[in-house]
Every structure is written in structure tokens, then in C-alpha cells.
Length: 57
Image (cartoon, rainbow, N blue to C red; front, side, top):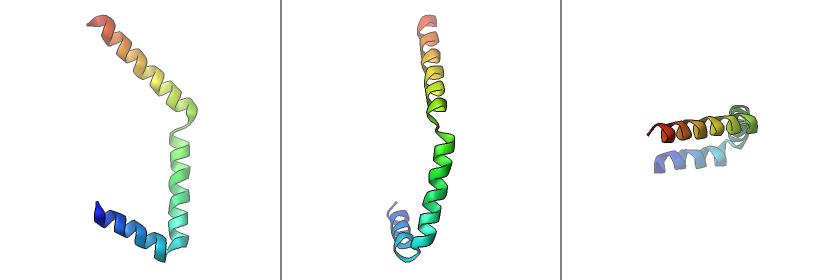
């Protein structure tokens, strides 16, 4: 893990423009994948599954 951290730091220090672009790209991906609506729906599904298992067992 230390090597990974070193590479990230090197990228940020020597290639700040590229690091910013990578950060923006990944932030956009996260915002698309983890919307509030999706996360609420997935938690509701999870809770329903837990409740069903509790009723069965």
C-alpha cells in the first residue's frame, strides 16, 4: 500500500493537471453510480431481504 500512496503523491506533485482530471473523472463516476435515489432503493431492498430472512428463520 505504501507504493500506491507514493505513486499518488508523485502524480499529485508532478502532474497536477492530470491528477485533477483523474479526480474529476472519478468523482463524476461516483456521482453517477451512487445517487441518493439508488442508494435509498438499495438499502430498502437490503432491509426487506433481512426482514424476510428473519421471518423465515
